[in-house]
Image (cartoon, rainbow, N blue to C red; front, top):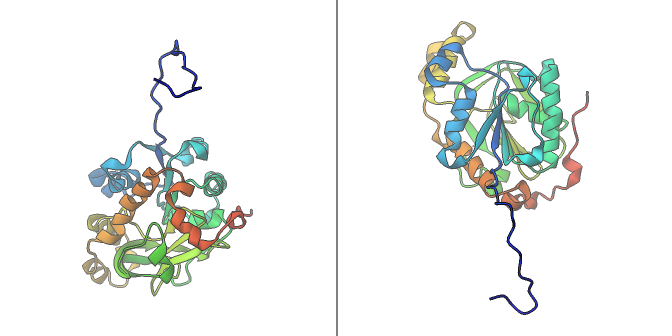
Length: 278
């Protein structure tokens, strides 16, 4: 029975095909150490595991190979991996990815940039990336959340201080206009930030477990004053690791505008979307 005045729809002669869910895209900008890759898989494998079994469809794209990045509107979310490359070298594939990232932010597709991805996001949106004046930061270090993190859709509810895994020589020396600093430590003032409604960069590695961190400390031992002391400080980082699952949950809710309405407290509008300059 239909309500008064309602038209009765004629059955379609064509069967309705199921709509494929939009995937979370992992943009693979680098590979881990050969020894670790043989034991644990690569960066994209670690991230996929961290996103969790309920993350839905996950796809991987490697722009270093010339693979075209999909239109932002076709994606549920984007995660950009770490890399042994340097953003300041401005490789052509990296610059193309930066341009694409700026489009993702403007389209309010949820974005999470990790290490290289964090720096590339900062660069894409008008920040400055180069070698950190303090040199290499490596190991398990203490992270301190900024007050803005208390109301951030991704970081809210985490303790004010928790350990994270880090290895980087470059940093986002200057954040993009309108970016919100979310975390820092003694070495790195920009350990995490948000730009717009739903794009985050984290300088640390939520996808690293303690074994991966020890592998990097061992590989960098010739460059460290006391590698044994750095290795002795390595420990699990469950709060940092939880960010991947948190991000997947945000992405599962829909578009950036729908999932992160709490971020409207920042008051940001279109003015934050300032693509990088050559």
